[in-house]
Length: 452
Image 1 (cartoon, one colour):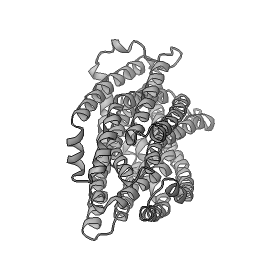
Image 2 (image 1 turned 135 degrees about the horizontal axis):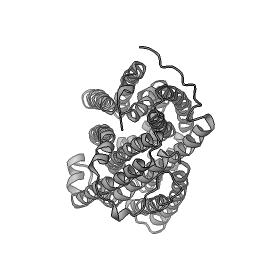
Image 3 (image 1 turned 90 degrees about the horizontal axis):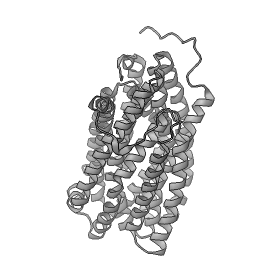
Image 4 (image 1 turned 120 degrees about the vertical axis):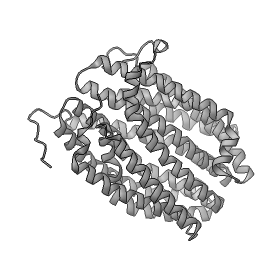
């Protein structure tokens, strides 16, 4: 294919501007992930039943939260395209419509999950130990109440990032994480509220984050500011543009998490030690990739603005550049988390068998992840920002279910390989995605799409 010519104009994002966007964004993702880690570490000393309950419920929570984030990211892409072509009015209207549709959906889901708390858990996880289910129901109830707040916070933070303001969401995350840590210590270790205490602290922290970001968005000096929230009415044309990006990304993320739930159902049959080991390994694997995911999320803003400005050559350039940055970040993160794995299992009070399994699985992840993970995920953020969302969704869903779920279930239930079967399936999934997304990026077919 004919190579795109290099633009003679100055780059939209020089190194300083790129660092200003990416560093706070990566740290913000780390802080958001840290909130869930604090919950798990605080309850780990309450026994395997508590940590197993939090692990099981968080697999549902992550599904829902990532679906909301995908929707918010759709708003980010649309806003960044409008800002790239200097159309602030439509960018503002798109932000208002994002808030409207997200609030409605999150409220409905929250109400349904509160009403069907117990039946939903039994449907997904089947028969687990009574103590685990009791803790799971308590934790699920309070975290479900937080869905509208985390959804609206995601909207606000994504709208800020679309206008290259990633510092403010990071500052809000710092404060909310400090609040969460303090309240966890008080509610769990002083008041002895158990897993409910961790969920309540998360709920309060998310209410705070949402309130602050929505208040800050009213600032008229921002390129995109939102006021008079109660006066927002649906504009289906703009909602359609947001959903065009958000729905495929949401389906992709949801199917990804449904796959993890299917795997979790298999792990839940291996006993409490395996559940606890898998839960802690999931947390560590999430942490060693979260900074690189922040780079990918920043790539959506960068590619959105460059394509909105009609500068396709720069979009290609930035995907290459940010993939290199992400590779360095994920390699260093894997090594850092590997060094912390044994201390984490000790501090978390994990039983000997759970700790042994966890350390073994993290060792495997540390070896494999730097080799294939970056190209499996980072280019896809750029493709989504270009509007190539259906391709990304199709590849991710098929790869997830055919490789990760089917292979992991086969290895676990037929060959009885234990929780490491989950990670063998995951590594296979990463490898296939890496090849496909590399080929798609090199083909330049993703540049033929239009967002606005």
